[in-house]
Amino acid sequence: VTNRLTVSEDMLQPGDLIFYSYTNNGRYLNISHVAIYIGNGIMVHAANPNRGVVNDPYIPSNINLYGRPSG
Image (cartoon, rainbow, N blue to C red; front, side):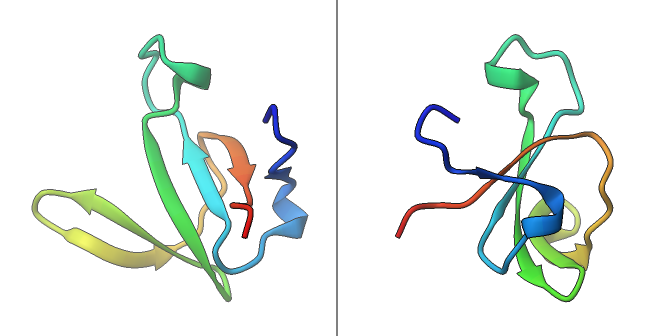
């Protein structure tokens, strides 16, 4: 945020990060999960120990922030 690397949902591009907040954990913006947008409405993330790293449909809920890594 400080370095102006945030984007809006309508600006999402492959490689952008999606920061979720599922719990009030006292950390920055309560971020508790991160996914990578890979395009066409799909994201990749470490879902849970049983599912592992998977591609899932991007569903905009519990999202605190979208970010674009600087290259």
